[in-house]
Image 1 (cartoon, rainbow, N blue to C red):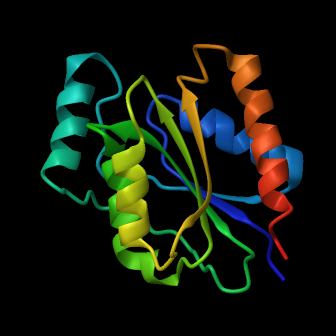
Image 2: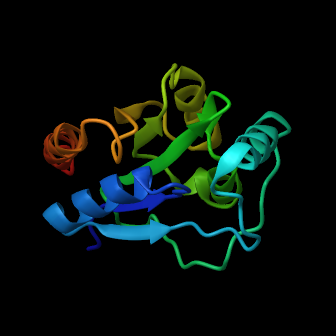
Length: 164
């Protein structure tokens, strides 16, 4: 039986750092979503591009990836917050696989503000009736790195106890 999987998108490395740390600690599978067209990752363009994609409901095409939620105790969705919701590449993934996601947890990395809209959108895009747990981290790569990673490990440990 497969274990938990973290499906994630990361532009600047915050979400990647957290996802890889948890996967290494607990042996969970990782699936990184990669857009076919590169996304600006620095300067003002990244904010314009990212915010525009979310606000307009754009779905960037992703590189092919193999995914199945079958037999997994839960799926963790992880992404940065852009314009109040999760990054647009995650929307593309959820359009294709959301109906198969019944036990979902989330990790949201952000630069401040609320993750409430992202949580609401994730529930609407999945088949889950509620999120098992949500981890919210403020720029974990740059701010309070060790504290953020310790919180992520603690969160994942508690989440892992819900596997049954």
